[in-house]
Length: 572
Ligand code: UD2
Ligand code: MN
Image (cartoon, rainbow, N blue to C red; front, top):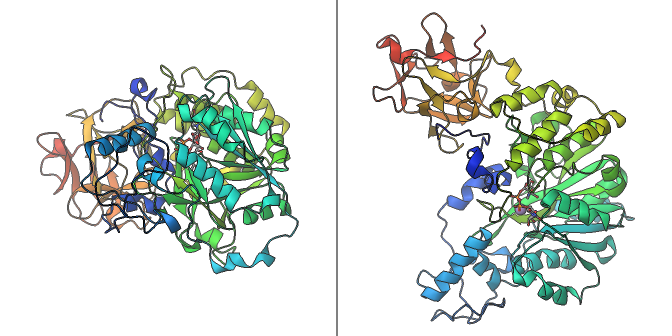
């Protein structure tokens, strides 16, 4: 942890430059905030029975002894499917292989109908069809995949066909980003031959999801483009509320609410519109979810109305095809995964559009805890994408991102075309965007110190917990001087911050906790003369322990060197 640059922030984030090339940051980042905990909760689950023969073709699988029960279809109405505790060795191997290849429980997916039913997650408000224009534009649906599981991909497509008005779907364009799984070759073509709306487009080499999406768009003809990941399920009435917004204003870019399809049980989990989140980001240029801010709530009579969102998660959205082109689509210099969602979000707002989340539209997505596919080796892909993004769109604010990556921009290629695009479109400044669209974001320049917090005598620095979650204790590691996990900000109001998390002391461990802005347990003062970090409510001082492996709180002044902290860039 200590020697590693974690440009990742919340949710695990990047490992160091070397191993990061092949292993992307956790994909769980896109999981809506307060749903994150659900997966680890021990919920009593109804045991579903296992049919004798899994629906998908997979001859390696052996039949399971009892229990066998054909009475109910598995996973209908989005219900969870759990495997029996005792299973044969062969079945266990099939289950494990499914996890290895997909980072979700493919075996369970294969037991569920590709036409399964789902609950209707919409608020009553949404079901009044008079809310939507009667003459909606049609959309092409673009679904890119690299080595997607058979039943999961099919279920994505069928959920679109089964739950969208026929006349509103132009084509469903499946873009194969150079997969090598055998079922995605001829078998896929044969299967969809019976579905005239479905078109399969093959990339000639591995492009990554960004250029794959552009390839898909080049085949589109409908007035609207709708992008989905290849492991989604659309629910009843998902499409009309999205198209309605674009029909009213073609510069509105819209995202559905992204519900969680459990990676293990494939349970479909949703909340009503009072639980809607909007998108943000941090200075590692990582996407994050946030509650709808008060200023936004005031604009609405109902929580089911579309809400402004500073950013989008990236995978699921609709956009007017001409407006997408007008904005210069995506930066085609972006590789494999990441950053494109922020690029499109910033551009949309800065160049004359609006970005909304539409609570009446629900689409489920399987959030994975790791990325199952290969990235490029030898290149820090995500960093390269993010540097391109920062160079073009962030103006002077780019420095805050660069600081977080130890100012090592690496080779990010040529961005002059993208800069010219921004100029031609006469887009607004990033300052305008922050002031008007994302005023909640803490600006490092407003801090009285930013960088490492070092116990000088021991050369140990405050370092992030293993995970960015409420209540996890702070670590200490040898100072590495590269920002990353050892990057902190002291705000004018006395918070010691890392993005949305603050140093918090409630009488036990010193932990990170979501910043609440109410001082109290999160209120610290730096005493420049004694170098002590004094805590508000307890009156104690932050100290490193004798063993130099953790921090603790103790009476101020009792053991001075262990309480001496140097705050990088401190400027009272
Ligand atoms: C999220 C987005 C994803 C994308 C990404 C940032 C959601 C729900 N998902 O990550 O759409 O915006 O953030 O870039 O908002 N794929 C390819 N080629 C590749 C890699 C991936 O075609 O080289 C496909 C993949 O099969 C999937 C889609 O792109 O259908 C997104 O990839 P992911 O599911 O691994 O990304 P996710 O959901 O973690
Ligand atoms: Mn995905």
